Image (cartoon, rainbow, N blue to C red; front, side, top):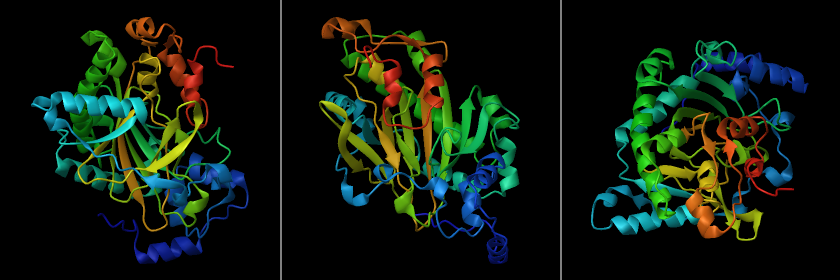
Length: 382
């Protein structure tokens, strides 16, 4: 397990604490954290001893470990897809997609030493001085494909999320190696390319189980936008008052997530007749495993047969942690709706066809609110 080390010397830490900025107003905190690019890590490094009011979540959004249990689902061994147990593995993937919208995989084709290098690279980036990270802030970043920020939609959120991130959108190997941050570009690019093959295999399994078949151009349309995020959750003085990430489902097709060994990821089990209720499961980190999340796009394509995973992240007081997702998302011009084969079988469409650019605009235009993003495409939603 990685021990998170301070990014500055003991002398600098003492100096920071003595010069800790005052955040008596919400505006001054917002300027420091969001606009100036100091992030949550800047708050912690300033000598902060308690969570500012702007980060305190309403009681019903806080994560109480006592209100959840550990998920005991065994990881799925993807190497067995090529052997006599192929059908068994397919059944495991389909069942997980139909129920939790989440599963973990091992023997996935991403080398274990690369996973360790990814975690080290993420810590290296976020331990940079604030001014070196701030060059990637929206509006000043040298490329629109790289964005450093904090929380999810800070301009929309009543309570901010205790997270900093850097997002890297893929267009070509050459562009990634030229524009992505030097601390992480090589390992992030390799991770994205290896994960993409696994995602394509999983999508083909899920679509095939629906009795449908998509040509390569349609699959490319569903997976054509790819990005790597590196998320950083600084150690929090009052983790019981905050969230690292609020309740949400991912908008895209499939998400591949690398956890570090600290934990803090929670996924909801939906109740059959009440999407708003359900039990929260804590997802224990498994060495060498990757987390697979079903996104809203797959739920819509399947007419609701597959479930996008509602999830959230808890902070910790003991040490900072990182997570590294790869998002595979439809291209902006793609139209998504229930597959005709599924609608014919179900007798009714539960979602309308929408342009993915519109769906994406709605998703990013609102604060996290569980699976409310799906309402944008839901038919007869009141």
